[in-house]
Image 1: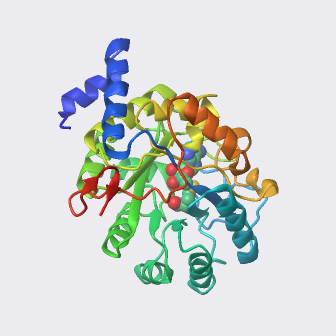
Image 2: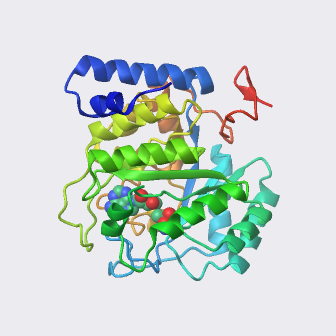
Length: 345
Ligand code: SAH
């Protein structure tokens, strides 16, 4: 659907509840037309909270002073085993930029997971790496990569990150990933410090230009021990409107109901699905490390956020009329793949 930038600005700011309800309903209709009433799940494995970066918002930044951990390849394989038994067909390996996870460690791990679970997709979310590294990981069998652009406004990027980090390098990584044939996930926080309606409009233009297969958005939540620890959290309401608008603009995009939304609102994930989201990412990390991957305060790690409660998650989704299939949940292509009865060729 085409929405003019004036229409988008109006939808983001209007206080007309009927217009907002109509936006959500239309987003669901568009999602259902492409994907059916299905929510895909991914098992999130937080492999390390060591990080060489110092992003001002992030609770595991280099200077955060938090307790550090890293999972061994054996522990990661065990998480995959548990996840596969629970019906997960995508594993997301996420972490800080931990130099311990060299290509020499990661490539064999990726190909082991792939060899053992050929019916599964592997998604990596390990921050910025060189093009050669991305290429090796792709060759080892990684299918997807999540790297939020964080903000498409260069000045805003500079206010969220230390000077040593570069907007251009983040963008370069995204285009490398695209060129190497990954399904790519971009995204941004809603309500990060210094964000404005104009920077959000730039995020939407960037998404329209880059056409990521996935867009991860969630509210900013302050993290203890960071320069932004006293900043206000982002708005759940605004996040939901943005999800719906992104669904309308990009009917085929994979749109997660993020943990950050679930953290700020008890039914945040259900509300995200009712705004057009179609992915959930329960936590498959070992229980004792979940609390340590504290990128923001009070991050949910139990209840239906926990992978072992997948039955509960299914019930919650069924209660809003959605199925949670045992499925990789691949992107339904833009123009190179035809959609027939919900299956693409
Ligand atoms: N190191 C990886 C993974 C980062 S964690 C990378 O650079 O991609 C995944 C996402 O969590 C980040 O991209 C960021 O958008 C989000 N995040 C980090 N701190 C946050 C906070 N305080 N509130 C909300 N989201 C946050």
